[in-house]
Image 1 (tube, helix red, strand yellow):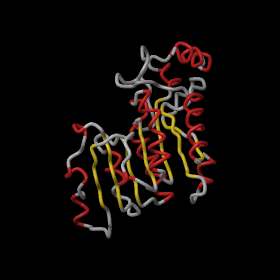
Image 2: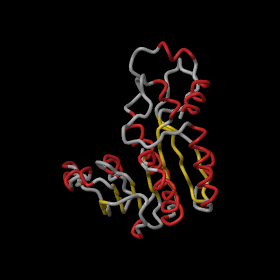
Image 3: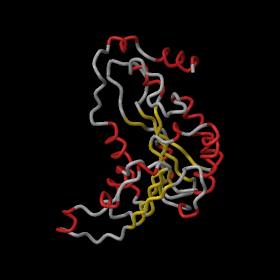
Length: 240
């Protein structure tokens, strides 16, 4: 960790030290996450979508309105975070102006590192702010399950960017449950290794731009967008 912080410090302009106010993003970070996935769905029209580590299913509430999605699945290991049925039910306005949707929504209590045949071969699987909550044993198993067994066409993995933490006073890890946080180089080395092994390509966008007066710390949250090589629109991943 000490070495990581030294690498980060070398990349940041000294001007960040004079920032006294809280960082303000153009829109709340969680909305940027949801809009990022929403735009991918708009572009690629997946029929089967799963969100691993779905938490309170906020992303699912956004995606349920997409007419292209026929099956929407949420998986979370914490029963307490599972959302109630009514929050994923149609909005009141949907009854006034009904749409011709063929959508099934399923919530599972389960783990992202356990094999589940019901999630095999999905068009899109998202893992938003998930991997940093996995211990070393589960993290080693995670690619085997997600890429090796489930093998979806498209995968979105987002995780905190350690370099950005320098803009948060007195912050080492952003959440007490985080087992680790990676800088851009570390995450990209991991992601490229996984992609090459399981025959995917990967691009590295992100959300949460730093203030203009700060040096090259990257996005607040970094993302890996993976496409199975040979699948339709693989070139979009390469463009990143």
